[in-house]
Image (cartoon, rainbow, N blue to C red):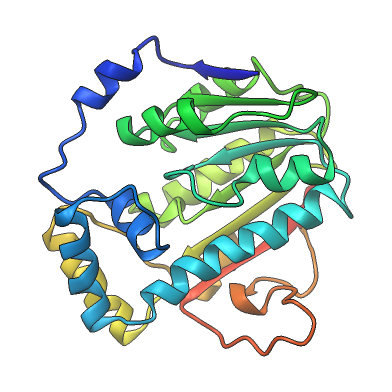
Length: 269
């Protein structure tokens, strides 16, 4: 099943709202990940950021690798079969539904984004295994009620749900508002549900990079490791806790180095 809830806008109309002459955060991120869904303006901004913060490419890849490890844990060890992925971004390799459905083909995934470019690509590429479901909700992270209403068309909220929020709360400037959004979403899911979240944290070079993207109309709000940890208040945090994401359950034999991105996984008791 491939759904598109929360909007009746056809893909062609969504594409008409995409301006390839100015950089776009999802496409810049795609560029850092080595994808092909980007344009010269995106690559130019991506290169300017890379010049002051070369670790941005490692951060982009570390976030994707953390997603794979976290979803593998949730679908495997934790036995979760429903995922609400908020802030989807452009599809690349190993999207949430692909990782989850490799383990449990019956898994149901709802992706949420408010970006017309993501909408076009999600409809085309985020297709489910036959026994599961994959759907898309066109909504903003600042509107959790709209997200929950759309997701309820595919997910059964009487059963556990994993909330997946990778690199999305940084789009909310006020930390109290961001915490309120996470709390509202957690209030809507039953005990035994999980939160998987990460976000960028401050550092001299990353702060310089944020100044560049901010000047280009792409603000992102970094947080301290303690602020990221606070999103898990009241949850049973899975070992090794809220850490720099390369250090979260790394592959055996690997020697990861910490980066300015923190995250973790927590269970709602």
